[in-house]
Image 1: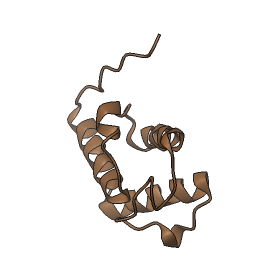
Image 2: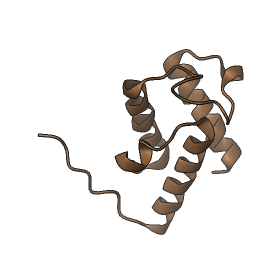
Image 3: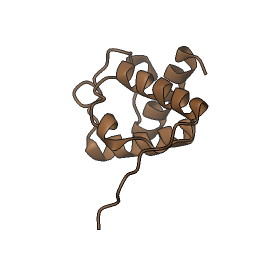
Length: 95
């Protein structure tokens, strides 16, 4: 999957899930300030990205993502990790 295809998928996720105008979603757009998403929205995004990457995202790395461009890079890295066969993060569920 190319960077452009990843960007297109992310724009589609953001516009469909949060009723955002696709033309307003740029690589430099900040998720929380410019696109007005919140932490619950972020969880939804990463659930959908799991479908795209086939991997459970590392929540610590996911917390660092602030822009659409960083989200694209995150997906690229997850796809590369899947291709290498890297294990998924061992995430403990809260009890």
